[in-house]
Length: 399
Image (cartoon, rainbow, N blue to C red; front, side):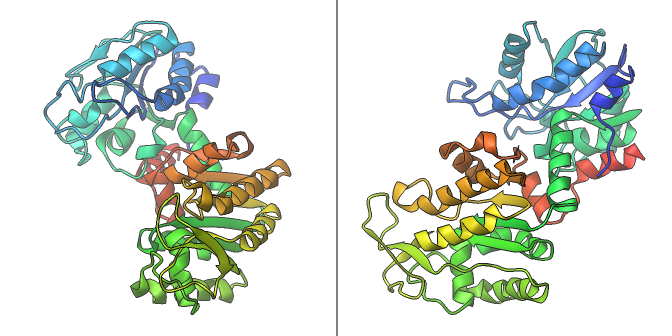
């Protein structure tokens, strides 16, 4: 994927005196009093803002926050708390501008935050007239919100079509580079871990990755449905029996191209889904009717770890067991350390998805993963093989 970047424009001196419109992802979690409980997204947005300011641009930043009703800005929907936090972090006042679609007054070297863009009528439907109004505000449009790249909205796609210049911010550029490296031109063998509670939510990802990978590892409820497809007993484990034929199709794709989906030889089973439930390690063919599979067993974890340690590229989406419960965390822990070790020895690894990022942090390997995606739904749609609208329009404008 080839796009223009904010960094390249700054390096060429093309931002001096220009009006720069940055679409960030500042959709931060807040408590019942409206206070920010985690400012990671704000911190991640600062390099783009600082880069544009240092290059002498007049900087406008906007984002969505929550799920507002178009045409109305309530105190709950307002970005004021975000403006205050950005100001604290960069050491200057960041004015919040309301009713900004008709014009914004900002001087080179200054930055303003434009009120919640999803409050604008026509934003979510990517209204053309609204998109043109946005584009008229700037000389350079910057998309630095990969987490919204799968949504074709006026601030993610529409404005990019009509702005004089459209480019990717540092966060967006890093995400595009990492995903392109992982799936576009990977070092082989390419291994992917896809786990989660339901095959139905990851079926398109599984089918797409099966065509690309050398090794596909599945876990969680997804694994249980694959075990059914291979004729293994799963007791009362979470599974989707109606999707067994789809799992067999994935297995057939892998077999046809000489790739593998390693099945467990042992599992951790319990009679209740609880942290303090009695559990046992048993053969994959010895799961009782009143038991559920909550993790892979130690022999399986060791085998999967070996598979990962010899990989050239690893894509990780989902823990293989109920890692939040200590008794059922060993499989995910083993995989996390194996991915980290592979990365230490030169493999390229990318992890994405909320539970995956949580597991990365729980097991303390965040500094040993090549790239941790914050893309959420956009990351998953990329794994599905879908064209992300906000990335596609940047590619078009780069040409």
